Image (cartoon, rainbow, N blue to C red; front, side, top):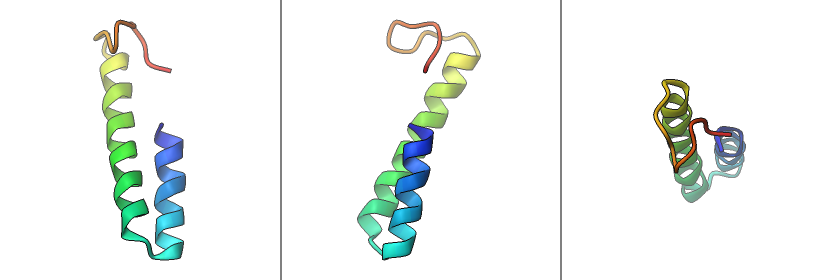
Length: 51
């Protein structure tokens, strides 16, 4: 999810579309949040790890 968010951020930056920039930023933030929660041992969606 983080990689997809970064790709969409870059595409949004190149094309100048604010919608892609916003979607990419949200994906990166959510991906990082899920990754951190999984790394510290909290269950995410019923799983002990996220990937």
